[in-house]
Image (cartoon, rainbow, N blue to C red; front, side):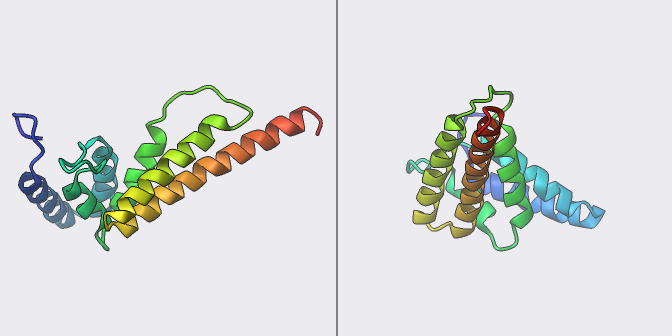
Length: 142
């Protein structure tokens, strides 16, 4: 973000290349890419209405950006924070729907690798919902 609140594709690209070069030299590239993925969940939406800025989507979708995509997915999952456990799994199902829609939107915009990450996140929420329901049923004696 610039001082005027506008996200700059050019500045983001320069910054990302600088970080990659300097961290490759120091031997910290993999961990740096994971941490970059963590912070990219805070990027703004694109001016065209896509939920993520296209410059960031381009970077995350790159074939060599698996570490960033993993960090991005982990940060989204962890951003939920503390929450109540609903034995019906309803909140987790809603999150799964939400991230499947984001995956569909991003894939329709041409970012297939990033879509896979979001679908994996949705699947994780579905698995959590299934586990909560199963645990609730076993506690009820079913």
